[in-house]
Image (cartoon, rainbow, N blue to C red; front, side):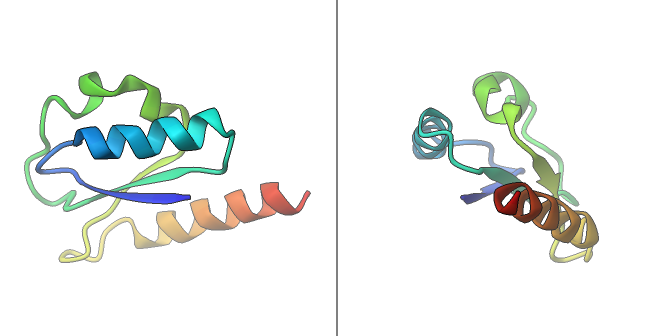
Length: 83
């Protein structure tokens, strides 16, 4: 499962629900924090700490940042599933 979160706005209860479900079911799970070029919501790390047990990749589509790291992380997760 891949969850896209707007890093400038923070997490919603819906985001938390999706994350808890994926973690409870032990499903592969990656958090993508989009808009990494904007100031980050300071509550992001504190509000739902359980989300950070899985890979988190910060990207900025506007600045084209973090895209290569995102692809590497996806490849690693796929390799883990296949082994």
